[in-house]
Length: 348
Image (cartoon, rainbow, N blue to C red):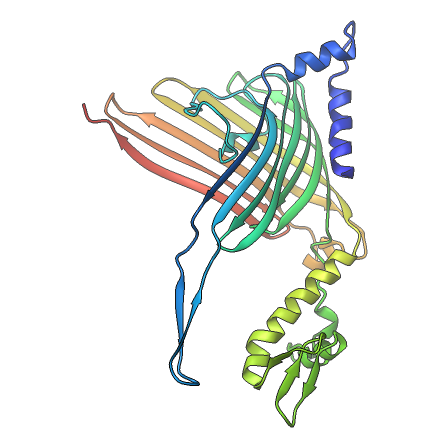
């Protein structure tokens, strides 16, 4: 909630304009915006039969519940020339990779607020992507919040950049960025590491409430449930689950940290009916983060965070065309990316 309030404040500052009242600005900036709510679903992976011969032949069917995506959002982002919206309605499954560019197609204020609650192959995620971007000839202001459950990344970022336009196609930018996130440099298991590089997992499990009866080879959960009857199951099944639960809990106990970074970037856009090229990138080469669990301490020095995208399309003639599209992000050694490429041939 605090992050959304900050983004809204950025919007209020950006929409301040002389000789116009707030209601007029509100109407102006929300003109052509689209609010959408949608539900999408489909079957997941097929059922799997698991066989056992321990007590005679037994068969257990593992079922994966159906996939779904519940989307709620509002957006106002001008489409680039290569973006053809074929659907009549927004359904929440659209992937507009150009949203990640530093500048949009037009000057002024653009925004996106979207929340997706989804289940994929039995795993449930809450994904969010909100941003407000104000672009002028000389500067770029942006506030963004991203939560990607599948990539396990979550942060809030603001940036203020000076923009230098080389021409109508190419521009460079430089400025400062501030990121609020969990301390990705914190390793909850570091204090349990032994000198030989192994981890004292049994002692940690006991501290977490597990009980072990070595003589009877029985292992019990903190709730008293028998979870393993052999050392192999204990080490290969129970311990990994315990370690995952422990690290997640310890990270959630910590406050978020703020990080200041220098940011450099560029944007290039050219469009014709037969050829288009759109490329952008941002690089953060220097950071200031002096917290107790700073990523700089974890990394033993400075590091490089970056993001970028490339969209190319070429229609060789009225029949044949090819395309390449992709985006890539790397923050704190966490990566998330998408890509696609192909050839189209229209048969007359």
